[in-house]
Amino acid sequence: MELTTWFTDLLDGNLIFTPQTLGYYWDGLVTTSQLVFLSLLAGLVLAVPLAIGRSSRHRWISLPIYVYTYVFRGTPLLIQLYIIYYGVVFVDGIQESIFWPLLREAFYPALIAFTLNTAAYTTEIFRGAIKATSRGEIEAARAYGMSQSLMMRRIILPSAFRRALPAYGNEVIFMLHASAIASVVTLMDLTGAARFVYARFYAPFEAFLFVAAIYLCLTFAILYFFRFLEKRLLAHLKPA
Amino acid sequence: MKKLLTVSILGAALVAGSAQARDYDHVRFGVDVPYEPMEYRTPDGELTGFDIDLGNALCEEIGITCEWIVQEWDGIIPGLMSRNYDAIMSSMTINDERRQTVLFSDPYFTPPSAWFAPADSELDDATEESLDGKTIGVQRGTLQDNFATDMFGDVASVSRYSTADDMVLDMQAGRLDIVFLDYPVGKSTLLDSESRDYKVVGEMITEPKEYFGDGFGIAFRQRDEALAERFNEALATLQDDGTYDEIYQRYFADDE
Image 1 (cartoon, rainbow over the protein chains, first blue to last red):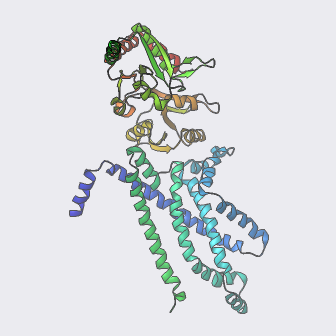
Image 2 (cartoon, one colour):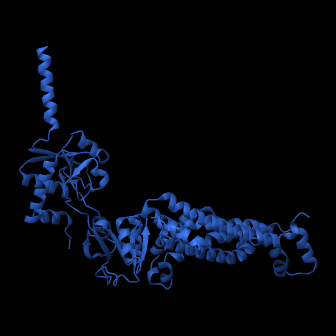
């Protein structure tokens, strides 16, 4: 009870954080969460086969994937977003195609850009982990007569995922922060809400400090989730 | 000794004379060019524009002569204070901050905002019913953003852009149903563009004042109240006898 009166008192004397602007921040939080979660999920699904292909001995498989990761890691995400959002419009006939209802919204071009970007980074993270599989494990699997695919499924990938976990946790946090650029293509994500409040009330400190605090909370949640995962999955690597 | 006395009396008289408001029969206007179509130069260097024509018409109405002195915007109020000219008529928006320093005439112009849509759009007015479920484009933080958000934010989705160019691009792409812009900006970027046909939807909008401001005023030095009063009277006369509308049409008429 005391908390609610304290909260309403706080809002009463405040011109900026009205229920309306808090609503904008809430919608922004929902948009940011959806965007980051979906792009990470899709990126992860894409990255697993790509990472396997990338570690292939056949150059005609690994080279195209290398070109893809090189391009998407070698250019700024903002540029990729601009190209996918504004550039796609100039493809002939796109407005009549079945994809247009999706591409018309700002959400899907942003989702595509973020997915392709995080998939490229995740591919490289996994490839590094796959490459670091110790020779002994592979030789043992061969000695048991495992086929290439069975060995990949039972031996290499499970241990590679464990090794990749800390680096992947970083990628998740980077993705959360990179999503702040979604507001340049009119999406009202968290940063979009903050920019709106800033432009409306000319109050940079209130608008941006508040949103920074929300990002901090999200980052904490991600950090603790990965710490929990690492404790579970990497227990065998802990010093006794 | 006598000479010195004469000089000082003469000086004192001069100072006293200049400190008093005087009757102007010649007014010098400070103006910052170019700001099309309010004030700019024709290809042969002649000053022209809505402000210039209206200013000249006002002087004629009062029965005085006037001249125009070009001054950069950031020094335009200091120039008035240091008597480089007697008034500023240069698309200056009336606001409280400037009122501290200068004396404003009645507003003589409020830059209109307008709705623009593709020519083949079925929209022909901008109301809560017609905009229901549509996507509106505005520039972030402009008075048009505030107006559209407060009036239509509940029924339509408002897309905010950093620059007018990005917004025009998305309008061409078909991501926006309608945009809300300063009329002169919309005219030059949309109506005059070659790539696609656009139309103005509904009326030009200058009301309500809490969104669209007090408009442009002529600025005088605080003590020249009499002069400002003469300009206000002349402005009222010109607005009544149709001269104002004639000048307005000259610069803001639709080309259709």
